[in-house]
Image 1 (cartoon, helix red, strand yellow):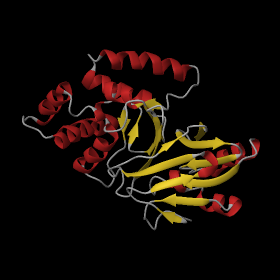
Image 2 (cartoon, helix red, strand yellow):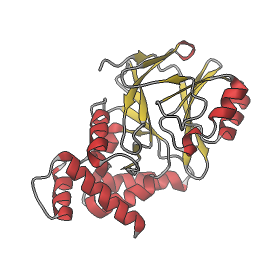
Image 3 (cartoon, helix red, strand yellow):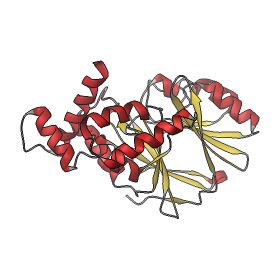
Length: 270
């Protein structure tokens, strides 16, 4: 897939919402685009305080904590609302799918749509490449800091294919995830990859950020490749863990991922 490039003259701001959600806002020259505004209030306050025009809302999947603001925002700002084809997503004005490229001239911004099912079957992500080789991926609940979304609708094989798409992006890509779950995810990762020096260093760095009320996001794909067990299912250490966890060898990549996901689900419920 040929990905569009953008000038990156915009600012990306993470607005906290609910207990641990982030609404991502891209804004420049009086215009803004918001990603997954499940709670409209923080976004409305930001838009009003900065005297912005809300041009569009981008939705990654149908869960209410991502879509709850759609109807109110559409009514107040008459903004376009983009998202996947799912009747459970309210107030959509434009359906999008893989290979679509969304153009936002006011921000000199182009975003490519990637279908990333697994957490839900309708899940999509939005990627904007930049001329410096970096870019932003608005990945909803597909990837978190040192984690990934639970498989509410998809299978390990489906999610592994989605993660392969993300792994193919440039290492400098900034991952704009929808939840602040990083420290909990790191705590789990250390139980299966505790000898990983990059992970140990990340725990110190991200714990310090949270102690100072700073976000751990956006992360970089390079950092996630080094520390996130859910993106390391090709790594020999993670393969060895999965073989031990499942009690058999010769696993394919989706089985390795599935073992890591099953171990995290068990850890969450312990």
